[in-house]
Image 1 (cartoon, helix red, strand yellow):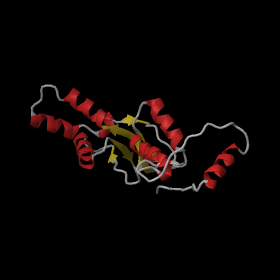
Image 2 (image 1 turned 30 degrees about the horizontal axis):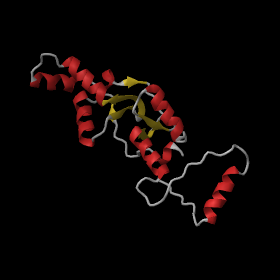
Image 3 (image 1 turned 90 degrees about the vertical axis):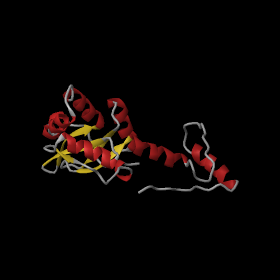
Image 4 (image 1 turned 180 degrees about the vertical axis):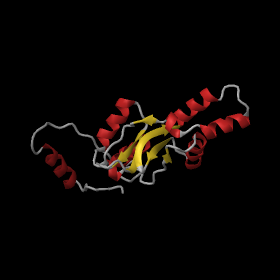
Length: 175
């Protein structure tokens, strides 16, 4: 299964020259946790809700509300973003993507084409959807697990027994 079939395609991005307060507003309005940061239509960084909270806390010490708003309007996203973010191509498998997220302790990555244009974003939530789809949770049916000898024909033998008892294969594709 490929990333391009499971990624969120309606990606909210922010320009690197936008203010920190604009990035905060976008995250809240869209109820998301990360924003790909763009420069001239290409991915230049990523900013997360954690980055914004960390920057707000450090810059907000002992400021009054109007002073804080002024500061957040002046700070540019490019000063707090993670530069050269991890990104994946659309033809990477979801398993490889999950490994990248786990290894780097991140919750999602932009999906970019060969030219650096953002095509989508894939998050842990999207990967959970893959798992749910594979298991058939919430759908009528029964799930089986078999441990079989690694030899040609071993899976066919099991499938033949299931078919002989009225079982059938059902395929489901998302997107």
